[in-house]
Amino acid sequence: MSYPTRSTRSLLSIDDLSNSQVIHLIERAQQFKKNEIQAIRPAKPLIVGMVFFEASTRTRFSFEVAAHRLLLHPVVFVVDKATSVDKGESLHETLNTLLAMRPDLLVVRHAGNIRLEEIMRKSSIPVVNAGSGVEEHPTQSLLDAMTVQERLGQIEGQRILYVGDVEHSRVAKSGAKLFQKLGAQVAVCSPKDLAVRDSNVQQFNTLSEALKWCTVCIGLRIQKERHSQATNLSQGQYIENFRLDNKNLAALSSSAIIMHPGPFVPDVDLSDEVLSDSRCAIHEQVTNGVYMRMAIMGDLLGLSYT
Ligand code: NCD
Image 1 (tube, rainbow, N blue to C red):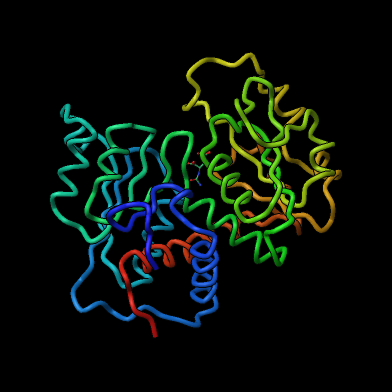
Image 2 (cartoon, rainbow, N blue to C red):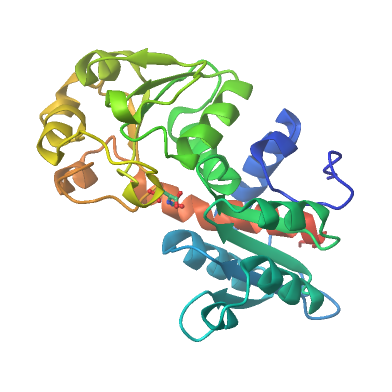
C-alpha cells in the first residue's frame, strides 16, 4: 500500500488516504480482530517511538498494545517534569532529537504546533499523527469508521451527527471529512459559541430534532483546554441541552448507535447510564482502536503476516 502524497509513507491527515486505502485498513483491522492473521516477527527488532506532547489515555495505551501485538518494540516518551522540555528545550528540538535516534516509526500527539507539523511532514521516518490541534485525528476517524461499518453493515448513506463542542474537536473535523468521503451525510448540533465556523455540514438547533435525523450519534467533551476565549455557556445549560442521557436519547431510533471518542465527563457530556444502552458502541470503539492501529502501523512498516 502506498501513500502517494508525500515522499515517505506517513499518516498525518485523513486527506492522505484514498477511499480504497481506508477500505483496505478497515478490512485489515477486521482480520486482526477475528484472529485471521498474525504478524511475523521482523528479521530485526523494529522500534516504534511514541511521543506525547499532550495528555492521552486510550490513544497512547491503544498504540502501545497494538505495537506489542505486532511484535514491535514501543518506546514511549511523555513530556513531563523529567524531560528536557522542562529544562527549556523547544518541542521541535525535542522531536528532531528523537527522530535523530532513527526509530522505525514515530507516533506523535501534540496540541497544534506548526513547527512540529513541518518536521513531521519532512521526516524520512514514517510518522503517524495521534491527534494534533483542533483539526486532525486520523486514527480515531478510522476506528470510528470501522465501528460504524461493523455495527451498521455499511458507512455509505449513514447520517452521522456530532454533538457538543464541535469547534474544538479534531475528532469531529477529521471524522466529518472521512465519513463524507465514504458517502455518509454529516451534521452537527452544538451550542452557538462552540459551533464550527465555515462549516459545510448541516447544523441542527435542537438535540431532539438532530437525534431523530441521525443513524450515528457521536458525543464530544467540552474541550476547555483548547478554548482560546471563555464561552458564555453555563454547565447547567450545556447539560440541559446537549448531554447524552436516557431522557434525550429517547428521540434516537432503536437501530441507531451512540459513540464517543472519550474521555467523557460523567454527567456533563454523557451520563453513565448510556454505557449500558444496547445502542452504545463506546467500548467497541476502544477495542477497534487497537486493531485499527495495528493495521496502520503494520502497513507503514511493511510487516508480513501469516
Ligand atoms: C480525543 C482527543 O484527544 O482528541 N480523545 C481521543 O483521542 N480519544 C477527544 C478529547 O480530547 O476530548
